[in-house]
Length: 99
DNA sequence: TTGGTGACTCTGC
DNA sequence: TGCAGAGCCACCA
Image (cartoon, rainbow, N blue to C red):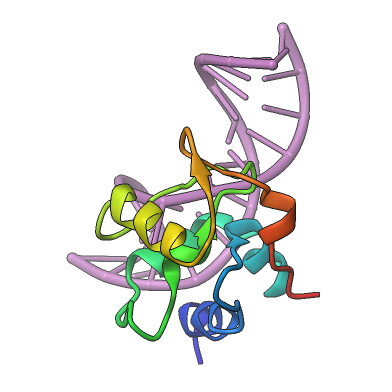
């Protein structure tokens, strides 16, 4: 299992209605490979099984998404996560940590 | 083997 | 408080 696969496994633990961050995933994998997490998400082979739209920036920003930021926001709002001005509303409430 | 790249983060000003 | 630059790390050619 490579780094990307580990990212995907962690991500699948994030329940619907919650989000996590690139930073949290990197820390859970025992490092500071924030950018590598982003790279892994960008190459996500199966967006259906791996909810990469639930990964946001550590400052509550949306970050990016393979199908566009608008699509990412749409998916998040469908799960009950409010997004305003490109940021997660009540970020602390919906944040999922792997600890 | 190595250098470039990127869906980011952190720190200093 | 906001911005810019440096740093980080895995992946790929």
